[in-house]
Amino acid sequence: MNEPDATQPLHHGDWQYGIYLRGLAGETPEHPTALDELERRAAEALEPEPRGYVWGGAGTGDTMRANLEAFRRRRLVPRMLRDISQRSLATTVLGTELPAPVLLAPVGVQTIVHPDGELASARGAAELGLPVVASTAADRTLEQIADAAEDAPRWFQLYWPRDDAITESLVRRAEAAGYSALVVTLDTIELAWRPEDLSHGYLPFLQGTGIAQFTSDPAFRAALEKPPEEDVPGAVGHWVQVINRVVTWDDLAELRSMTKLPILLKGILHPDDARKAQRRGVDGVIVSNHGGRQVDGAIAALDALPGVADAVGDDMTVLFDSGIRSGADVVKALALGADAVLLGRPYLWGLALDGATGVETVLRMLLAELDLTLALCGFSRPAEVSRDALAPSAG
Image (cartoon, rainbow, N blue to C red; front, side, top):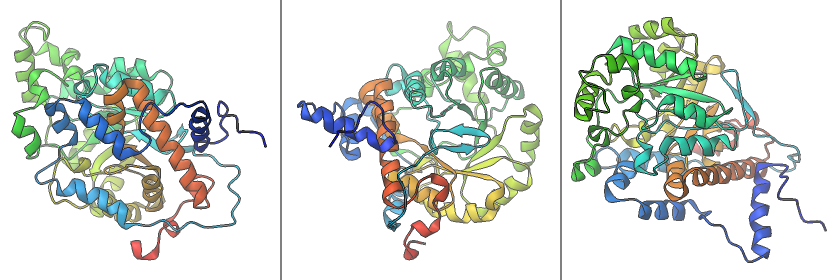
């Protein structure tokens, strides 16, 4: 019997055979293939302050735990005697063809995890053609992130500033740099009570970390007495004054008038909010509780997903984040109505261990497990997954 050619995988799941074949030569994987071990090693690689920032959540951490428990409650029901010999993870989201229903969630201040920060994450994602959602709170400019992403799709996440000139400037820069959608994060108009960060007195933005989109922006710089390079405290002080405008439904028309890019709202948990977004012409919603970092005791994002998906039907793009830890989790989110998911903390663990290569490795593992889980459950492609994939008692 011929061994599979691991250099030419037919499916993402075949990536595992390369690991097995190298094992014949006595080689073992450089990075853990079990996510809990990967997480442990990543935590050990960081100093207490950045570790607390990445792993911490709001209040008691109840919402973070709820996100994970919501996935554990739901059980997949594999189906047999289906032809899954030819399969693909490819899908289309907002007119963009993706190799898999996975994007990298917007995460700020990534240089506290690895010196290359957002550039490493973009490079790791680009190796697989997966989109990165660049954060307004990044420590690298949106233009630098775009260059690192090369030809891979990319979206820009907007923390809506209080200064209209800065808002429009950021949108124009995103358009010019080839970003194909805007993601407006709604759930951080105030910073939640985060005991891990408070115990260290640690907020990296106040040190000038994570404000590169602003210090590189001409509208922001025009309001400063001195350039940021000469007066970091002055730049930070102005950033504090302009970040995070309180946005209402009526303000969405203002953003719509600025750009023709698709607009998604991130942080939607209630079906009524999803319906309002749909009525106002928003292109998509992202069901998210910010990974449990904003409201302690909030509903698990996965528990909110079915209601949001039902509220908007097939006429609106529904994405999901908060709690994705495995390929099986992705399948469960698809079954409950998500068109695609955004991966958060796990790719940061890869970033902490090995920069761009670590990010790429985590993504390859996720896609391999996603492909294998779909196949073993009897599905050839993401679009085939429905709620029938879950046990009836799972809700």
